[in-house]
Every structure is written in C-alpha cells, then in structure tokens.
Length: 400
Image 1 (cartoon, helix red, strand yellow):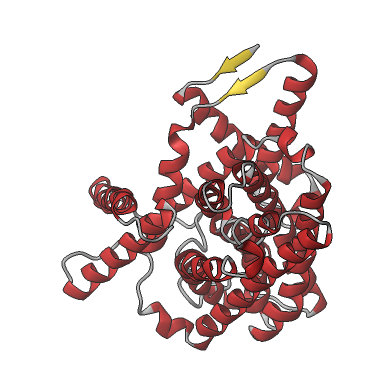
Image 2 (cartoon, one colour):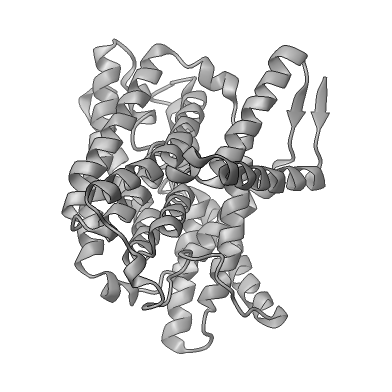
C-alpha cells in the first residue's frame, strides 16, 4: 500500500523532522556532545522508520518534492547574495590558502576512488562517481555528471543510481563526522571561541537564532532578490550548454553578481541579516527533506566495491582535515571550525557544512572567520574548481 503525501502534508513532515531532531538532541547527551545536527538526527530516524514500514509492513510513502529544488536554489541564491567581494579583505590569506587545501582534497578523492575501483577490478567510472563528483559536489553535481556518463562514449548505465547512492551516503557521513572531528580538535588543543562573544557582529548564517528586526516590506524586497536569482539562474542553465553546471551554481553566481552590482551602484543595500533568516530556513527544510526521503534499501544494496570506496573516502576526509586543513589553517579555534565545515561539504554539501559549524559554534563559541571562508569557498568556488578537475581527470587514458 502506498500513501501519497501532498504538498501540505510533506511540508508538515519536513517540519516534524526538524522538531524531532531538536527533541532527541535535547534528551540524548551523546548527540549534544558530538554536535550532530538536528536535520541529520531527525532525517535518518524518519528514513529508517519509512524503510521498516515498507519492508516489513508493506506500507510505502510518496512525498511531494515540489519544495525541494526551490528550497535548495533559494539557499544557494542567499549564499550568492551574501558574497560581497569585500569579504576577501576580511578573509585575506585564509581564503586563498583554503582554496588550495580544498583543491588538494578534490584531486585526492578522485585518485582514491579510481585507485580502489581499479584494484577491485571495477569500472573506474564508479571511482569517479564516488569521488569528488558526489563527495564534494553532492547530489546536484552527481546528477549532472551521471547524465553525461550514461551517454556516449561512456555508456555506463547505472551511473545515476551510483551517483545518488554515493551522494546520499556522503551527505549523511558529512553531517555525522563534522561535529566529532571538531570536538576532537578543540579538546585536544584546548581551544575555545567564547572569548570572542559579542566583540564582533556575527556573520551571515553564524547565529540564525539571533534576534533580527525584519519588517514586511524589507522581507518582500529580500524575497524579490531571491526570486530574481532563481529566475535568471534557471534560465541560464537552459541557455548555457557548453559547460556542465548544476542549476544551483547559476543561481549562486546570479546572486553574487546581483549583490555586487547593487553594492557598487548603491541602488539597494542587501539586508544581510534578513537574507540569512531566509537562507537558514531554506537550508533546514531542504536538509530535512533530503534526509527523510533517502532510500535506505538503495544504500543496503550497494555493492562491496562501492562501499569500500566510500569508507576509504570517509577515512581520507577525517585524516585530511586533521593533518592538512586544521594544521595549514592555523591550528587554532577558527581552524577547528573550518575543519567541521570542510567535513560537511567535502563529503556532502555546503548546507551540511554550515549546519556542522553552527552546531559547533553554539557549543564552543563563535568563529567569524570560518563563516566568511566556508560560504565563499564551499558554495561559491568549489563547484567551479571541481568542474575543471573532473574534466581533466576524465581525460586520463583509462577513460578513453
């Protein structure tokens, strides 16, 4: 028997996931100590319950997915609208250095995926799809490249299934390991950010619970900017066919261009705090939907080679942030929070990275530098860099 949830029922389910996650974290010390985000906790529990209901009771649920893409695109539009390029002055060498660190991980993820696949006698495309395409690229980049691998000259039929399974696995892993890794670094090195409280205004997405003065007219103005980003971004995706880029990248770029044009011309001042509210709501609801609708059966049915590759990617991610990201970003509290964020978008997506960092900073204090660097690098630059690296890797002889 299939139960179909309409738009309103699905929205209620998404909110329920967030409330469930919040409730459980309040009552489970382990989850609080290791900084596991609310959408991850609630989403995984609901996904498991739905899997059990389908497998043992014969009841399946079908959700209305009409909100998923708009929420994701709206979130990335707010990231673009927050990308005031004067932030580079604030981030300075940290942003440039972090770009090199991120690029290094992208290359290693692909080499690790391809290496394990070849060692196990499998098609190296499995390694690519379980590499930076889905680990650092997420579902959007995974779906885009899978569509390419299905066609000539690759003709790899299960590309979409492999990509979605790997991206889902990575999304969960990125949300789970980010908090514990940051806690390990903070405790081991006796770090804290509480001394920074109230000394610097929190950056975008850093403190979504902070009171904000929002009026109906200002909300409409911010909503109009986001709507423009979604409209232009989706149209650019249709028009620009010479490069493979997910729609959310175009929405992000549109937001960044729009923000900086408005800043340069002084036509309108973007209300950053209001944009952050809209972005955080979109972020939480998107993650709730993505996690509660994951196909547990698909994860269970993954072949041994793919599971091996994904486990190797998790180990690589943990070791990389501890020995590379943390050390080369200064070995301080900001570096620990950056490491939590890197776990988030290095295995899953930038929304997971921001949730990881929000959870860590709630517990150990603010990290303003991390919330300047991660949105710019994790959401603004990584997809562009990743696209070039993937294209270069696909030029290797083993794929031809």
